[in-house]
Amino acid sequence: MRRFLLALLLGLTTLSASAFAWPERPVTIIAPFGPGTSVDIVARLLAPRLQAAWGQPVTVLNVPGSAGIIGVERAVRANDGHTILLSADAAIVVRISMAPRPPYDPRHDLAPITLIGRTTNILVVGNNQPIQNLADLVALARTRPGTVTFGHAGNGTSQHIGGEMLAQMAGVELTGVAYNEPASQIQDVLTGRVTMSFQSGVVALPRLRDNAWRAIAVSAPERMAALPEVPTVAELGYPGFDAVAWLGVLAPASMPAANVARVNRDVVAALAEPEMRARLSDLGVDIVGSSPGEFRALIEREIPRMAGVLSRAGIRPE
View 1 (cartoon, rainbow, N blue to C red):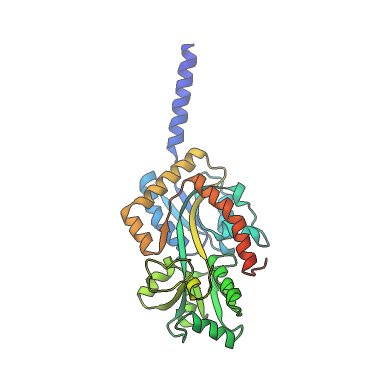
View 2: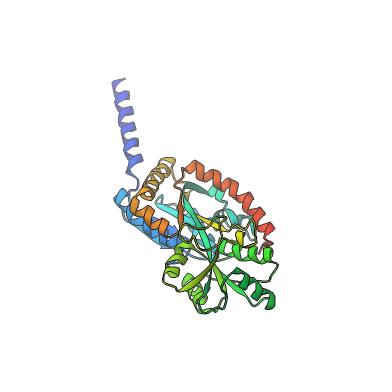
């Protein structure tokens, strides 16, 4: 009996130690968009803080393409136990309602860890454009149908949905231009090669402060604290307009619950750091830091809601 109890105690001790040993080697954060995007910037702000908490190297791996689908699929298929994902909403709750569907089901193939926060998109134009406000943009689209363009990061992203929704609600024709490379999109907006773009605050705010381009509206129902003088699209005559993205941390569904809880605890702690909060707020991120269960519930709600948004905006399957 004593031997049995000793063996049981040793087994529990070993199990407890292994549960807290994670991570046992370097951790990779997959960012399914390119360098300079909101996903990339937030991942790189988190990485050194998680590295300090875990005592293991934490690297960010950019895997762009197909509005985030390629990177999310890479994370879903990871079987090393040390890969996590920082994704925007498009590849998780939007593209599942578009054709072709992603090669994964986010409800079953991913373990939600935490909702980092929400990011308002800012409708920007280059300073060389004659457009001073949203009325100018709509008037230009009416007089020159099909020639007004908007850049976006791929079909199903909030940038894309914002452009299509504006076209539908204003009754004008806007031509979307998809970019895999964010630097090219930014440059084309700056130079006027594309007329406008809904850019995340993470990307837009630093350039607005440098007077590199002009903000004419924001995509959220309320004005941004960082840009209180810029009106919302809704208050400019398009009630109900809402094209806001969110960012969250997830893992392959195979990640043990104890490790999910560990990542959640340490990411939420990083988001609570005053320096981190100030940096994200300065970039226009509305910080949340949810539990895994709260994030899972959001995903379950958002999939049917976004299907309705796509339908109302007239966005058809590819």
